[in-house]
Each structure stands twice: as structure tokens, then as C-alpha cells.
Length: 137
Ligand code: NI
Image (cartoon, rainbow, N blue to C red; front, top):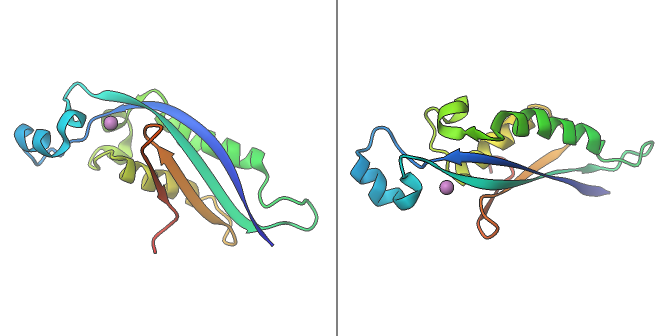
């Protein structure tokens, strides 16, 4: 019997949507206000879901304390109160859109997943705008 265990977390971070190989004008025309060179912030909410069989001995799919600690070290410590473009190496050359951020989060967590667990990451950039990634398909 497969169950999904979810853990919610959040981080505050600044970014701007920008390509260094485009002119300021092109960045502005494609990304609008989101390309403001002085950056802007979001209160990101992350939901990490791990799906797997319930372990017969423990009754757990995954020990949620382990998941919580993993999200803390891999995501919160790395992103919280950071400027994503400047301070987070993954975005030095990658535009920090919600789409790219959710893939980066997925990849950072996926390294730690057991082979029999399926990972899904949902990222809210605003209460109304969110993206999901559950691996290449
Ligand atoms: Ni933004």
C-alpha cells in the first residue's frame, strides 16, 4: 500500500529574472517588473512529498524527522534570506524562475532518496502561483 508523506517548509529569498546574454531592454520586455535590477523578494512555500510503501515494522513510509532535517539542510539553509541570483551557486547561470527553482530543489533532495521512494516537489512563489516537479518524464 503506497502512501505519500508531505512536509511543508518555507524560505524567503530575493531574485530577479534576467539573462546576462540579453540586453536590459530585452530582459525588461520579456520579464517585465520581475527583471528589476534591484531585485525583489518572495515568501516561497515548499511542499515535499515522498511516496512509498508503508514499512511493516515502523508503520512509516519515511521518518518525517529525517525529511524535515533534509529540507532544512538542503533547502532552507541554502536559500533562506539569500539573493538567489548572487548567493546561490545553482543560479549563477540559471534564471531563478519558479520552474527552475523547483527543479533545483528536486535535484538537491533526490540525491538522498531511497530507490523505492518517489519524490514530488511543489513550490509556491505566491499564494496563487505554484509549480510542481516529480522528475523527468
Ligand atoms: Ni519574482
